[in-house]
Amino acid sequence: MKPVTRIHSRTAVLADENIDTDRIIPARFLTTTSREGLGKLCFNDWRYLPDGADNPDFPLNRPEAAGCAIVVAGRNFGCGSSREHAPWALLDFGLQAVLCSEIADIFRNNALKNGLLAIVVDPAEHRWLLDHPGVELAIDVAGQFVELPDGGRIKFQLEPFARHCLLEGVDQLGFLLQRADAITQYEHQHEEKAA
Image (tube, rainbow, N blue to C red; front, side):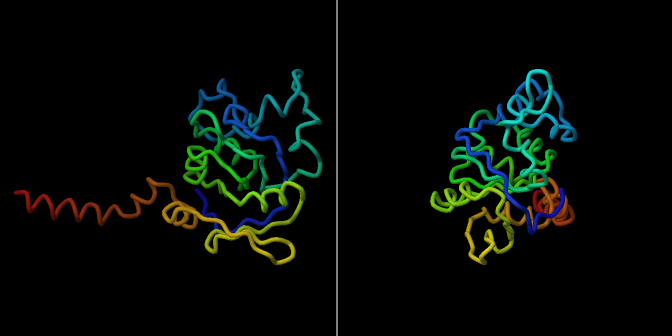
């Protein structure tokens, strides 16, 4: 996992509410444990027409969405069943952050654990972002704010451990492995006391 410190991008908007994890990555594609290649399956049933051609009505297929790393989604993004494949697919698709007024807790936790920023903003800020697709934003993870083009800031909260892991570019296992020597030392000290 790469460190996530600052993201600068235009926004793309997926205004639909209640975009669930099955819409993000359909269940029939959950047969892999590899993250690679899931981007081409991301939003599969919405993104492609039945003949496999790009759906021109899908917002992320439009030319103005090309290259956007930040998506502003409708309320209750990531609801539905828990699947780590959903943030994997979004990351492999090229997205680095999702901003919304309401993000499903399990999805948000999975996203943050995998290096995808899932940011909850207040409803008024969310409405403004939905109404201004293509706006340039800069997200500062250390400072926990989104910088607007006029210099204004939208504050957001991250759980401290998730923030630390994002900034360091480690997942939970990586965090523990960084402390392997201290863990081994602790185990030896307690083995001696038990003996």
